[in-house]
Every structure is written in C-alpha cells, then in structure tokens.
Image 1: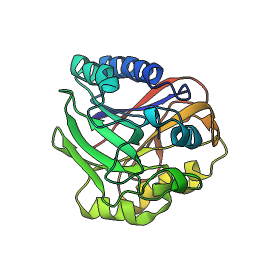
Image 2: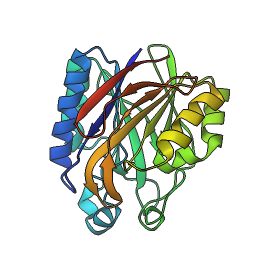
Image 3: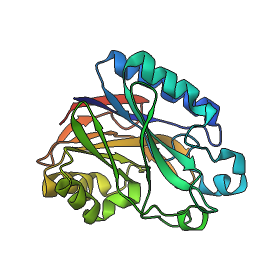
Length: 237
C-alpha cells in the first residue's frame, strides 16, 4: 500500500481553488503509484477558524457539489482522498471533519476531530467517535492535529486492528510534534503514522511542510521537505 503524504498552501476561504489543487495532487499521486493521499487539517478552506465562523457558506456537506472535482480525480486516478474541512454536523456547529473519498468517488467514512484546540472550541463541535475505514484489506485509523497529543486515540486504533494511522494536521516548522508526538505514537503502538500538513500563512501561523511518514519503529520513512508543495510517498500496511 503506497500512501501519499501531501502539503500545499491553501487559499483562505476559497474552496474552489483548494479543491482544484487537491484534485491535481490526487492525479499526480495516483500516477506515482499511491493508492491513498492524506491532506492537511482544514485543507478545503485553509486553517481559518474565525473566517469559517463568519462566513457560513464555507461550511460543506458530505455530498457537497464543490467536492465534485475531488471525487472525479479519485475515480480517474484510482486513489482515495483523505480531505478535511468544516462539515455540517448534527448540532448548530460544524465539525472539523475528515471525509475519506474512495477510489470510486464514494464516501468511505467521516471523522470529526475530537480534541479541539483554542479558538476551535468556539467555532466547531467536537466529534464523539473514532474514524476507521478499510481499503484493499488494510484497516486505517484517522486523527486530526491536536488529537495526536492524546495517546488514547492511537491505543484504540491498535486495539481495533488498524494497520496505519493517518494524521491531518496544521503544524509550523518549530512545532515539537515532529519529534515528540508522531514518531512516539508510531513507536508506542507499532503503527505507521502518515502526516498531511500545510504550507503558507494561516490563522495559526505559517505551515512548516515536512508532510511524510514514520515507520512502526518511529523512524522517518518519508519527508516532503519544508517548503515545496507536493507529496512524499510511503509504503505502509
């Protein structure tokens, strides 16, 4: 199973532009042999909680027509997409939601971030369930940024027979998670960890790239570097 860990600089509040970028990366990653591509937290809108709060149209639905190019790219490239954005939930507030679009364009699962950070708690509703899906016989777990600070999520993933742990995040270059969270989760629970991250300015700072993966021993097995949009490929599962 080849997974692409992606990074790009989302355009704040421009879902259409970000979807075009995501679709392009999906086609490139599929051509490079990837079966699944992992994108950053709130990649569909940019990490802009205040803007999302003030512009209701930025909130998507699971079957939102604006995601059409993502679904088409998945079908064309034979690849699954792990994308994240503000998505309508059961209450008044949206979730910070990962949507997993399968290679046939169908929705495989959704996962709503459970542990909200800072202003996120004023804008979004926390999720209550763990995210799981199976592709080509490999069972995947989902987590989003601050979630990864809580070992219980990875512990439950390992206990639930997941083989790969996918993390959609927004991390600056100096964030200690690159050393103290992602490799530790991999090593503690014997799960490869694949990180999708951002580049460019956002409400939290400036994305530091370095999307990639850690093997079950906690060693880096893929790194997209600190400053160029694109992806790194990792063999997992």
